[in-house]
Structure formats: structure tokens, C-alpha cells
Image (cartoon, rainbow, N blue to C red):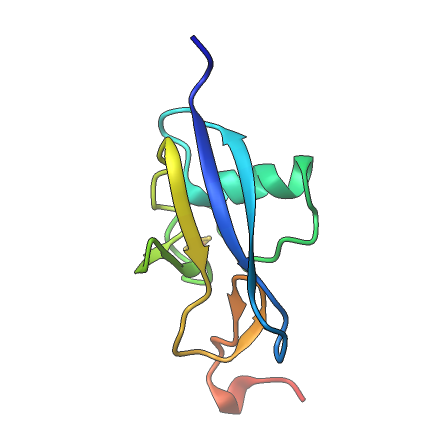
Length: 111
Ligand code: FES
């Protein structure tokens, strides 16, 4: 029997580009987070897949908020699942790139 796979379907685009989806198969292990899966993708398939995070798994920085299967989650606390998971940026924020959106309040932004 083959090892279970989590297929991450990731929305890709920079600001102003038409989004498309890339699929990445990552090995599934119980207890992993969606962020773990994205970090696996960056390390093994495509280092340009973009997501913002700082604390990795403490649910402290609040920077990894994305949509997983159309629901707002923290990528570091949402568990990876075998099968397909669709990852998208927050829809109500300005897109920076891929899963990264502009989350800083306007008066705290640089430039
Ligand atoms: S990486 Fe900090 S809350 Fe998710």
C-alpha cells in the first residue's frame, strides 16, 4: 500500500495577474499542519510558492491566515489531510503574491 498523499492545490498570482492553480503532492503524516505542507512544497518542488508566517505553530503571529477549502484558517494550526486541499489568499485583502495578502493596517505600512 502506498503512503497517503496530501494534494495541495495552491492559487498562484502576483497583484494584477490572473490567478491559476498549481497542484503539489506532499507526503501526509498525521499531525502535520497545512503550513508544514507548504514548507515541504517550497523545499522540494517550488521555492517561489509564497506564504507569510513567523511563529510557525504557536498561533501567535496571526500572519499565516489563508483560505483552506474556502474557510479562513491559520495555516499553522489547520491540520493537513490526505486528499485534496485548496489553498487561496484571503479574498478581502489586497493580494501581494500567491497566499500573501496585505494584512498590516494602512498607517503601519512602509512606503
Ligand atoms: S505562523 Fe504564526 S499564527 Fe500561524
